[in-house]
Length: 525
Image (tube, rainbow, N blue to C red; front, top):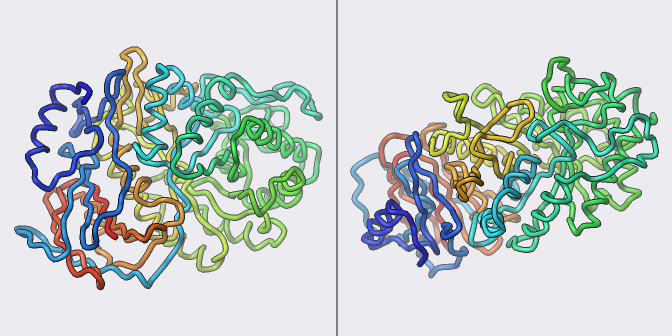
């Protein structure tokens, strides 16, 4: 075994003395920063990893747990019919495999410029370790990836692929170094090591400024003129060039969103790249310009998914009513992309129920989320701040319980300052890189994502389960994997341990202890 830090050796010694604990391939090498939990450190000599998911004998439950106290996807086994001391609260949870809901699309993260540059600044070994940590079966097996079309706030600079005014034939259109040196090679590697085909989809923050009403990439602004005009047609062709350029480099596209956060384009003070669309404009852009131009080039409704909205939950229901009720637009628009921002004040999750009840042939996908240490403007990554992970785990599970098909995180990687970001909108990410020290840190959000992405591959179906009616303190969901495995995901944000009587009509009851402030994935066959 490769060398680990002193804390890692202590933790390994303690864990080994637990008779029901089953070691992962390489345990976490922990480090404490100035917060209430740890990060796992990877360097040139060592990086934690996981064993692939495997089937166990009938009646055995594999329990994977991550906690504020320092567990990181630690595995143990319990048996149906076991006995367990239960000194605290007991919750009876019954699984109903005959009641089935939505199919899982996938979980993943995003290739912003900041993420690509951050990965690119690491050594070849650490670059590969980052990508393996995300996409391989030694890692958390991401199955979706959102790719930024040209620049966003998480870039070193504002730009597009054609900043030459009035270039109607797009003769000056070209990819930039962020694509050719960083994104495309990294995506090729990820594609080669992924356990399932990655659903790559792309989002644009802004068209070239000369296509917009304000002639700027930021400060709001919309496309000039209207549907069918040379401005709208040129922008559709501009987007097509992006998909073709990446496809020529072996990147297989699953789909796109029409516009990142389109309502920001109505704010004349908005500080970074944007373009304004309302629901009617997205509907008309897709059915008149974007959809037909993509279809003619081979990106058809059968093989390429266009998502509308790509903005916050309060907009979703009205947006769906507009874009899905139009047959010509609906032919191309397969779903809605939703963001979690205004967390805690974004309104009820049951708007998603309402949408899928009215439009059952469509899907919902969470397409962006990120958070940061709001208490320290000089250290946004919040390394080891457990509440950042709880925010993720809570929102993902409630999305899934309300028919959302998956959840794509924002930046795959940021640096130790939470950037780069050309407007100083720095944030945290599941992996933080420190090129100067030759190491990267798996932050708490990485393990929150792991409890979903590694255990709920595409094709998994949500199934029925009893509901714990204390949102924010104890939550659970049940799922059936394509390989026949049953997965229960439990979040405990309480300050004390809890105990579950997990009841399966075919297996009996398994009694399982749930640590305080922990995420848990149970898997059995």
